[in-house]
Image 1 (cartoon, rainbow, N blue to C red):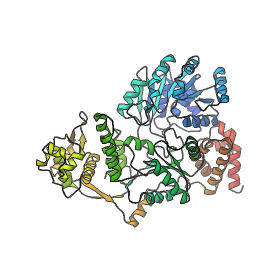
Image 2 (cartoon, one colour):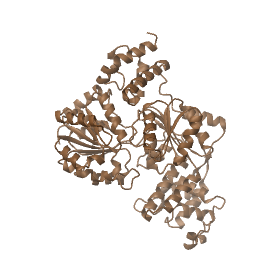
Image 3 (cartoon, rainbow, N blue to C red):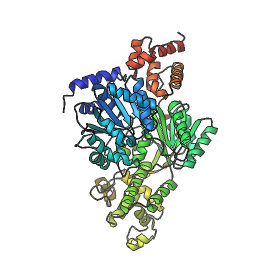
Image 4 (tube, helix red, strand yellow):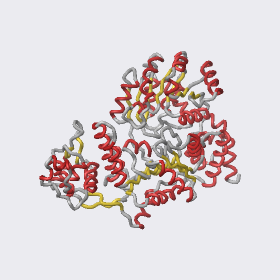
Length: 609
């Protein structure tokens, strides 16, 4: 380990001078200090929390080369473009690199000026590439999207399993692995599969307070989505769909409605996918209707909304997908639509799949967790973060906190459900318990003699689907818990026992309030405040137009020139000199020199100067 203090002082200076930031985001400084001190690090930070800076800033503060492995070419391309705009020597090597790019990277490596080299995992594992890199002085090995090493994850990349070999071939190089989506088992996998030494683990809060969280049962889904889009005219966003066909139908419908909407799914030809992704990244106001094939590595900071037209696949997938909104820290909106049909379809997928029984039990539990989040009567942020082991106060910034659901007394229903759990020794999951309570004589109920229980048919006024919903609400309220030592057993918490004994009551979420006046009021309350509220609209529009023109000339996304947050700050401050412009968020020395006079002239022109 080395003394990080002098390097950390240098990093603070570079933070403002290069990146244009006045201060670190929460959690960044401690992690960067550990990296500068020579420690191996795993950093789990929320999407939009500034993970890239954790290895980019040390790369500038130290003299050697930082090698970055990233799973997506688009992400590498955009990060390299942004770094070069900041005056940083960076390059990428992947299957799309042309000969000129490769020659430029080789020349920068030879003269020692290159600070960050991005390489795709497939290319990194080639013998000739690894032999070439072994001749370089590599100071730090950074592994982005480290959760891709998990065989049980939905983003698994088999090439990640061999990255430990790369670190060893490079002489046991210092390693940092970063990701936003890693529960405790995945963290253990990352530690075991990617590191030669035991790394220092940093886990920051998963909370994204700038995101408004909302979920609704489907009524008329397309109409529901269009109503929400009306609150985001001219803004960029993503709508996730469960099927390829739905992405195309929805994009066509929204286009007929006068919006710039494009589909994206794995069935489209590569040129169309690339063209639609580039349009989303480079243009303002594009709505992308996509399957989960779209997303990881999309580093666009000004996505103002992420909607789900159908139920996501898990809580982890939901968190990762909504995390693509509001990466600039400004308010962003989320909405998830779901139906009983979505839940039943996902349940059938799991039951009829080829996975081993243990895997099916895990997937079914994850589905129950997700639906508990959809149907909860508690603050959504409390329930969501609870799945990641965090406890927070009621947020006031979700649809439940703002009164969008109606509650009724559910004490008797809760008592019936918990009685069924006790009488079956907590050994049966929600589907079976729901059949018992509704009086449905399935083969499993008859096999275990549960049709003879006192609770059999005790809730026959409700359907099994309704009882599953009630059980999920008990779970989200923490009246019932899955045993930490035995995930196949359901127990009743102390709070649950109070309700069972009649010592406390339980409020059950009945439905979504549908009266128009109330809905309109809630929409006004729930909509994120316009991030440009304090900025002069005409000045901001002029700055965005200038940014778009400059971006098109350079063939880069608009945010590579300046992020929305920078333009909003610029329009609000209306700087008149370069010194004043340097104080704007996100204006570092390189961009001040390159764009300063141009943007000052645009501000003067917009104000009639």
